[in-house]
Amino acid sequence: MGSKRLPAFNHSNNNDNREKKPNRKEILEKKKAIDDLIKAASADKHPLDSFPSFRHFHKNGLSVYLESGCGDKLSSPTKQYIMGLLKANMEGPYGSQWPTEEKVKRKEMVMPEARYIFVHEAPNASSDEILTMSERKETLTVCLQNRGSMVGFVQYRFTLEEEIPVLYVYELQLEPHVQAKGLGKFLMQLIELIARKNRMGAVVLTVQKANLLAMDFYLNKLRYIISTISPSRVDPLIGDEKSYEILCKAFDCEAEAIFEVTFYP
Image 1 (cartoon, one colour):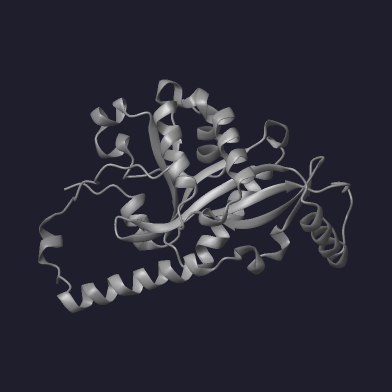
Image 2 (tube, one colour; image 1 turned 30 degrees about the vertical axis):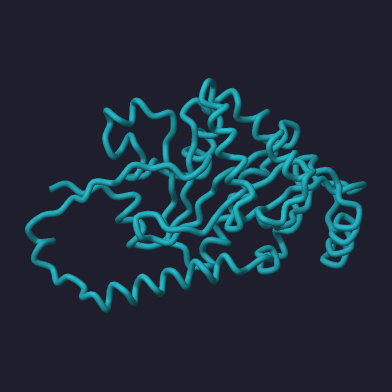
């Protein structure tokens, strides 16, 4: 996915111009508070500890467990896996743009601020079992020791968009055999919980227009919307030339006003 956007239009009217503008001290204090918020969110290296019920997914014939990671701590096999799955899933939607995007994604994936949720198949575990909490912990211990094969990942960052702190989802990639089982929705619910816990204003992500399944997944199944900072909303003429849309889900009024609401003069 990656963070791509065009500058949003600054719509205003006479009433807006008469409103009291914040002074320099207030602006600096707000900026510092937001910077501190993003630093604190990024400093949490174990986000799954806050959501133990999301450590496992047992449903629809699928049994997996989740593990967190950081971009600057990836092993060589993990890097190879990430790029292999990205190519398998995204070379088609990107088309002729893929060679350029592949280079960008290689750099993005190892950045220190990149955060990961890795999905591993749970060895010898039945998704139909109703596990007690102690059994879940035991299964997790076995999985961490044996490391079942990886079947997908989410890559995200805490960052600023239009001066609003957001969780930006760079990638959500799953192996074909674990798709259409509810796992993608489960992972995005976790991402939204992580965003809310860290007081982010919204979850933002970029989707290729050619990736019709992904567009349907986010817009229709998860109720994300095409953001006001997406090229097609900023300038339809420019938007037609772009291969992607920026989608979002806002969690507070300020973020909603920036990312979801179009103001007219």
